[in-house]
Structure formats: C-alpha cells, structure tokens
Amino acid sequence: MNYSPISPLKIGDHVRILATARGANESELQLAKSLLESWGLQVSFGTTIGKKEHQFGGTKEERLADFQQAIDDPEIKAIWIARGGYGTIQLIDAIDFSAFTSARSAGSAEAEPTTIIGYSDVTLLHGKLQSLGFSSVHSFMPLELKNKPVSSVESLRKTLFGESQILSIQNTFSLTSQVINAPVVGGNLSIVYSMLGSDTFPETEGHILFIEEIDEYLYHIERMMYSLKRAGKLKGLKALLVGGMTDIKDHEIAFGKNAEEIMLSLTADGDYPVIFNFPAGHIKDHRTLQLGKKMHIEITTDMINFTP
Image (cartoon, rainbow, N blue to C red):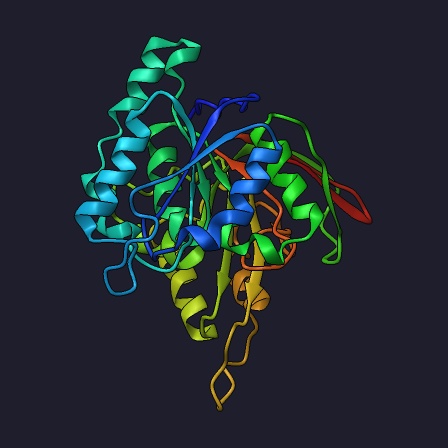
C-alpha cells in the first residue's frame, strides 16, 4: 500500500490537544503547550480538556464531537492526544474520516490531512489511518512530557518538522547483516490484537510490524501473538520490530518463557528478522516514529541503524 505522508509542520501552524480516552486538565498540559509554543506553533485545547465522565475526558458524544471538529478544521494541522488509558475504541466506528480522503483528492497544501500524534490507546487511530492509506505519528503523550529526556523531545520535534533522524541499537541477537526498506505499522500489542477482524486492522504483509506492551502477563503475550499468527498477520513481514516490553508479569508458577522467547518461537517459520529493544513504547526514552512511512533498517554485525 502507498501511504500519504504526514505534512511537516511549519512555524505558525496550529496544534490541538484533546482527549479521546482518559481525561486531563489544562494545568497538567501547560508544559506541553509551552513546548509547542517554543517551537513556534499555535496551541489550543479541545473542549474535552477539563471534562470528566468517570475516568474519561467527557462522554463518548463529547469526545467524538471534539475529535471530529478538530480533524474537520483545516486550520488545525496536528492533534496531540492528551493521554491514553482506554476509550478510543468507543469512538472509532463513529468518526468520519472523509476530511482525510478529501484532502488527498484535493492535493493542495490547504487541504492537507491532520497529523495525529500519540501511542498506546491511540493505536486504534493509527490502525484506522493506516488502513485508509495515511501516515500518523507514534509518540509519547503530553502528560508524560515532564518525565521525558531531551532525546525523546527532540525526536518528536524532528518528526513533526520533517527533519531526518537516525536511531541505533546494538545487534545483541546476532541478526544476519541485511538492509530492509518497508512501511512500518502497528503500535501497542493489546490494541493491535483487539483490532483483529475489523476494518481498523492495517495491512501487515510486506510491512515492518512494530509492537510494544506494558503490564501484561506472559501467557497473554503468547495468546495475542498466537492470535496474530493464526490470523495470518505475522506472515510475509519484512521485519518484526519490538519496542518496550515494560513491567511484563508472570504468575507464581512460572510460564517458562520470557517475552522475547515467545516471539521468537512464534515467528521461527518466518523469513524475516525479529528486532528487539527498539526505543519506543512505555519507556522513558520513547523515540518518535512515523507509522505508514518507509523505514530504512540497516543491520550490521554489531549495530542496527534505523532511519524512521
């Protein structure tokens, strides 16, 4: 599939911060607002910011209306989702994405589709956009900014403004030297798993599938991987790219395999590398990548270099 790339932001562009899942208050988002303004961007808060409906940033109707208004407004160039948790699935089937398809048909700068930024629960939005042929930005949330190092923040800035970056990790699994060029799709493993059988699930064959996870039991990691395999979603990959596997749990009676061993065993029949420790996910130094964009991966004897 050919994906429409995100449009690099320019000085003066407008970014909206809003909630599609759990709620947030303006006071909690001032650091993110100041950061974006220091980059020369205009920033506004959606109507969901400050609203509360149990754990959510407003009712389903309020969150849907806020997100819909933002993607339909041609003046808003990017949406940074305030926080994750749970709730985007309540909206996904009711969102009208015709503003994206209309923008692609128009082909003008004034009609560029909105850039969606976030991760974890936002994987639902990423999956929907990739299934429609659009790119989006997998990055940390505004509420996490106070705990992010300069490297994470700079990675986000470079991605949003269209600047190149190279990420490097050690080749600790003795992967064969090779070069891979393919679009990257995916996100949080639990959310990717939850999209099976829906029109939100992106195309994976011929792609690099990226996954990351937090706070799951090992047996459930295996269940989700088995489900992806049985559905044919691990077949024909160019690479399986594994980010943070954070706070993965086991029972008192040990499961017997760690997350890496689970993934290696279920992809052993695939003719593609499984790359662990990619710096993205529920980790402190979360680097930004553009989903739906071709990633260049160069595996050498000692290192793995990524140009996302």
